[in-house]
Length: 77
Image (cartoon, rainbow, N blue to C red; front, side, top):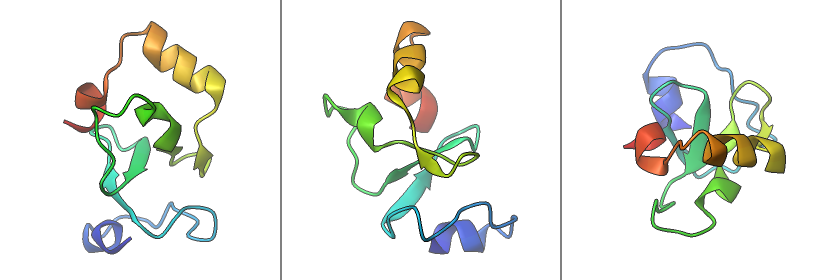
């Protein structure tokens, strides 16, 4: 959360619904993942939170990302 505060942008994150360890923001600013999440993890997508909805991404969103060929390194690399 400190990194989000440091960038000086609007506070779009409801801290009561997202774990405190969230530190990594996607390149497009739409997603965040807990610090320490590895792109090599098989269940990587399960740890992604959607900034707009302030919830973990749904199975449908995961399927859409996989179908579109969006990889971890594309989002956070």
